[in-house]
Length: 257
Image 1 (cartoon, rainbow, N blue to C red):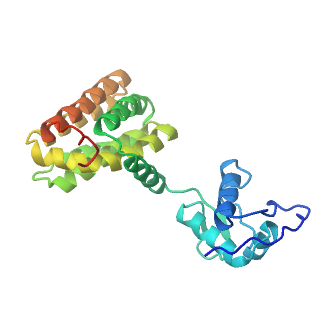
Image 2: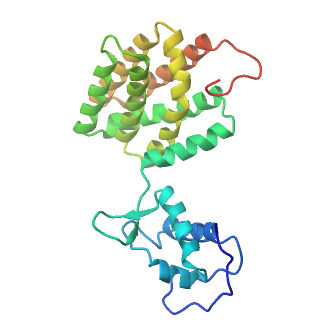
Image 3: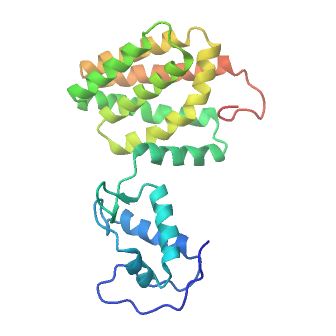
């Protein structure tokens, strides 16, 4: 539990942080440090001041600082390098970022139509860029992912995982970090509905496999517009599959219903 913030003391020359004037304590500290990381005052790999120094700069005791540090570690913003005791600024893994965004979207009752519209905006663009920018290693990874989709028999969970890997691979090959980070949360939202689609629509896996093959071939030959067109068809197919698997029920169009 956070302790009350005491009387603020003047900041010393060279201090990175100023003392807090009021509560809440640990969350306010975490927010201030996060802002320093976001604005690049603190960069990946930079050491964080010691607990004692942070407590002095913020005008709180060490237990409050520890709570702030735990929150920052949970979000992947700071951590310890193996063999070191000192905390350093880290870049959060994309999976950690995407899970947080997906959770927030789910809590806002995102509908499948909204998810589909976002996918239509992101996935075709990612495929077009991937065709022009992919590396040989990225193409090889996409090719292996496509081959997994052709394995027989392919269990539903394995098929869903393969689809997620395919979209992740295309986004990574796009060479655009914003597209990649925007696409990742969509995977987590898509997975529950896709599971039901594959279970309920017999031709789903065949259509997914064929679309992936077309997209991979376009990426292989660096045909950006062909890759974009086939990805658009692929995403439209998901909408048709969803409508077959989930006949419309008024008021029940949320993801994973």
